[in-house]
Image (cartoon, rainbow, N blue to C red; front, side, top):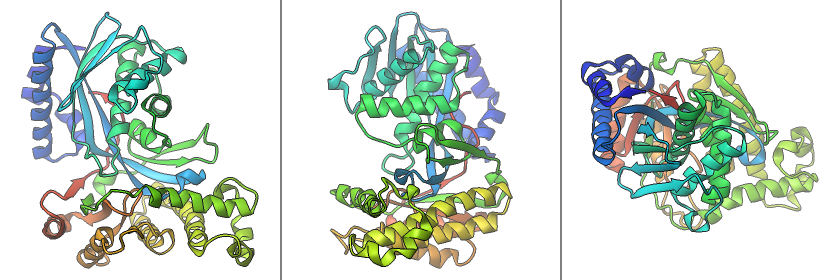
Length: 427
């Protein structure tokens, strides 16, 4: 904890320069922008909670899926990474037994720690997340206590970068440092966050988003044992590879896409059921191919294609992680390209069958391939059907790439990001 005046002085003098460079990259203009961002957040906090002298700064990142498109719900392997967009908080701890969080643009959330039971009327709100995380901390034997916080986020909503997981991780990180000396592990914070989202917020979700936001960097996750997934942080310095990560919003219409998303795990599980299994991870790939004609008599051709995608994509996610561990970015890019092609041809999540005339994701991929040639790669990002694509772009092509895709999809549609090596942290 530092005094407000100490934090202000450090922000003005560049006292957090090295920390910000580690989190947000070495671009001096980006670091300067972050110094201004934190300074404004401190001003807002001071206006809301002027009674405090000592404060702490926290940050938790968004995340991007890199490999393993639609493998997690089949207990598969995914590769994902934290990005340099985050939720930040200015925090003071109190002895009131109450957590108050004011997020920019939203009303104040006030949660009393005297009642940690599920409040049905809070479902779907950030208050539910806060209460759920505090409850799970308590149930697991960790210390909890009150705090006041002001938060602001630049994690893009609707972009597949998981602003919700970043907020959850932020709350867990604050409780860990504030009341447990930072002793709650990132993996435990991720599990606690998922618990809160499922049981208190009321949304069924996997563990990938929370885990990557909490751990940071590139993370390989094997969900074969869903209760105890295998987590491996990949030691790869993306900043030195000469590429930028670009996420492009193709401005697709997300309305009524739920049936399209639901059909993917449903059809994959239909194939698994033929073999008496619950999910495809339990099915032997060789046996699947040997009995392909028999399986076709019981499920649709699209279900078979989606199963084929799963088997190869599951292995690809593992191979991508190994390529990064071996510092072989060229091999990694080939695998990303293959992943994108498989999603288009076999998984078929590039456009919605309910509206085949709208194909913004396909158009974005086509234009990206024209610009990048054999120097970069692109793929659908996230669940698919509408929304965003992901491209790995050589640094010398970034300006050209951004200009051309924004000419098509509108100014501000291309976000140039980097991989953040750190998860949820106290600054």
